[in-house]
View 1 (cartoon, rainbow, N blue to C red):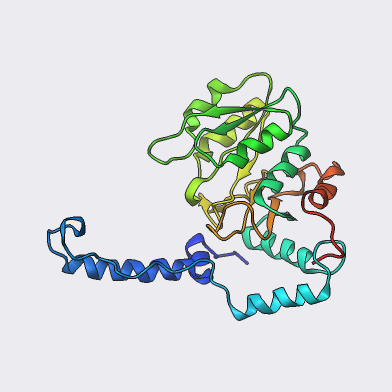
View 2 (cartoon, rainbow, N blue to C red):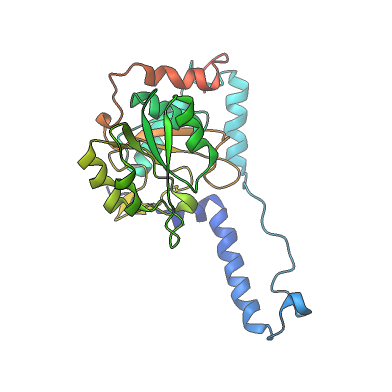
Length: 271
């Protein structure tokens, strides 16, 4: 069965979209009543109430959190919650598998290790990004190569990538700022042409799509984050590394299942 869950639907269900939708309606009504006088110059403001608080926490969230807390099994060394999350999230975006980590940053670090990015290698990253996208490359003792930003989309300028590729380049890391995609029609064929891997930093792009396919499920490894300030910034409660097909991240590399444990601690059990 085709999964029809979209980014718009996801935001609506989780509460943020509902808040934005309600706000937009109120703004339209308010704008229709305002005069030519700006609020800054003494006119009536279009909004007098504060914006909704995020995240929206429901009774079902509290119930599950308490179940995990009382079980005293807080990570993947016992229990079933992590595996349930991994399977559910992979199915929701159409990925072949998902590996939960403590943050989007950790997911990127695991992916770079799985792709054997190391000293002397270069990873092409956008100049307009979040610091972790660069930090994880440096943690591998590799070199981040900055690429210009497309002013019309605020994504990496795909037209500038090929000129930056050297014989040390190992991967391209597009960072989907604000939920939008970079120009994957250019990036994916270019990576294939030069034998590079594409690591999707889709931490801000929950259920975003490119030509009908979910971002982070394009037969390439990808990182995702769930946190208070988006959906989609790091330092999150639970995040994941996922890929569209088992071969996207070399499963024979035994470092992959071990790394998440080192990145968020072992505790007393598995959530």
